[in-house]
Amino acid sequence: MPESDLFYEIASLDTERKNPRTLDIDIASTHEILEMINDEDMLVAQAVRKELDHIAEAVDLISSAFRNGGRLFYFGAGTSGRLGVVDASECPPTFGSDPSMVQGVIAGGREAMFKAQEGAEDKPENGANDVKKLGITSNDVICGIAASGRTPYVKGALDEARSKAIKTIMISTSAEDKLKKLGIIADIYICPDVGPEVIAGSTRMKSGTAQKLVLNMLTTASMIRLGKTYGNVMIDLQLTNNKLKERAKRIIMETTGVNYDEAVKYLNLAQGHVKTALVMILTGTTSDEANFFLHKADGFIKKAVDSVKKVVKI
Image (cartoon, rainbow, N blue to C red; front, side):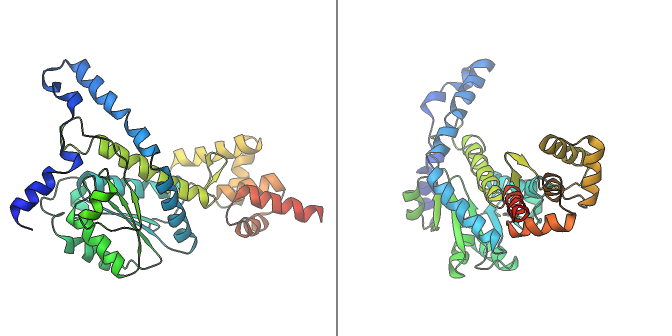
């Protein structure tokens, strides 16, 4: 693309517009600056809410892939890429998922998490090559993240995914029709309209907040759909540190009414698996029996408990 064309393309992006509500931010008091930022932030959640139908479609796609042994890959650059890496890294300790299940891929590699890798996002072939190197297949899902929507690295990853019949999601704060004009093609578009940034072009602000909210929804809802919670409590956590071990005991105590020592006993019998311990206590089954009913119930505790009760009645 000629440099002049790129100039006009970037200048036309929603994320580059001046915000009429913050034009005098440079001469505002500290409190007034914070009020402006906060006022703009309050618009983000409502913008995301308008995209719930598309987010739900994405969750169903992702959870279906998970149930069939597939994985979710986030592709992004800069702030967007970092948000993907953070969301992916938080899934194993929160939901007990395998680290390979959700992966964040950032233009420029690991170094780009801590220091901007200038130019890493400018080559679409870099995104395509990362798709190849990671061995992503049609069982998996690729989710591109780019506030402007035009990031060449992300476009390259999505184009490579399409060539391999891999399902794709695109998260952007640019409008869907603008993305399509830019040649960004995905199966599902999630495009919250957050309006111009507090500081023109600073997409780490409202755009980044919107992306973070959407990513939280995608993985959290998908994990819930896999039975990773009991009610609104996360019960598939990995006991990788003392805090999580004590949290597991507290969850068992609050859910079943047993005391601390009993919680420790059942957690040990369940080999540290909170879900198994809960089913054992709630149904009076052994560890092996609890695991059997959990497997039969696709990991959902309430379904497993109901199955045990039906068998006992018989």
